[in-house]
Length: 300
Image 1: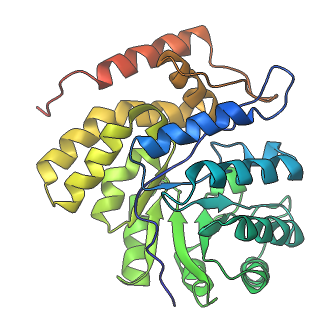
Image 2 (image 1 turned 90 degrees about the vertical axis):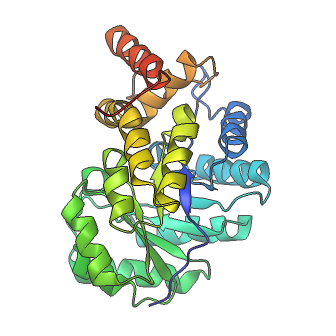
Image 3 (image 1 turned 60 degrees about the horizontal axis):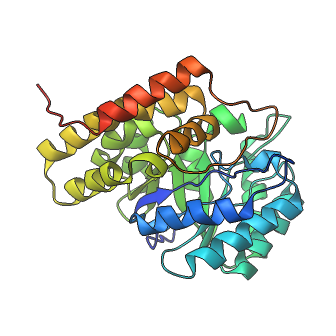
C-alpha cells in the first residue's frame, strides 16, 4: 500500500452552474472556485456529486476540469472526479485530468448492473494502469449504487497508485473499521457532512465537502481545532454548523448550495434539468439556518 497525503484538511466541492441557455457557465464557475481558494480551502474537487458530474457531456467535463486548474493555478491541489459507467470512460477522463495538471483523480464505481468485487477491482486496476497520478477510491452507495466493503477497499489499495479512500456511507462504525483495517499510513477522507467530527475522531485525513461554499470559516475552524486536539472547541464549531450540514445533504447538494450562495449574495447560475431549485419554503428555511449559523453559539 502507498499513501498520499498531499490532500488534507478541507477539500471543497464547487457546484457546476449553468446559463439560462443550459450551457456550463464557466465565468461564474471560475468565480465560485476562486471564492473557495481565497477562503482558505486546502484543496478543490471539481466534478463530484455537487458538480453534477453525471449530467455533463464529455466536452463539458473537459471544460470544467481545465477551468478549475487554470483558476486554481497551483495554489492548492486539485482532485478531479472522473467517474463514468464504463472503464474506458473513466480512463478517458482520468488521462485528460492528468494531462491538464490534476494532482489526483477520484473514482466512484457506477453501474446499471451491480458489479462484483472482482469487476470493481479490475475497473480500478485498469484505470490505475493508464495514469500515473494518485487515485481516490470513493465509496458512496447512495449515488453510485454500489457499496464497497472495508475489505474490498483494502484490496484496492494493493493497486500501486490507488492511495486514498473516501467513505460516504454515513456509518461511523464503518469509518472506525476502515482506520483499524487500513492502519495509520493510509489516507482516508470523510464524505458524509453530518459525520465530520466523528470522522476526524476516527482519524480522517480530510473532509471532502460542499459546505465551504457557504460556511468556510466554520469548516476550517473545525479542522484546525481537531489539529490542535481542542475537543471542546471542535464540538462547539461542529454543532454550530450541524443543522446546515444536515440540510444540504437532505435537500440535495447542488440545489441547496446554489440557493445558499444566492442567499449570501453570490451569483450561482442555473441548475440543469431534471434538477429544480429549492421550493420557496425550503429557501426560507435555509435562510433561517444560515442566519442562525452566524450567531454566537454554545453547547449547553
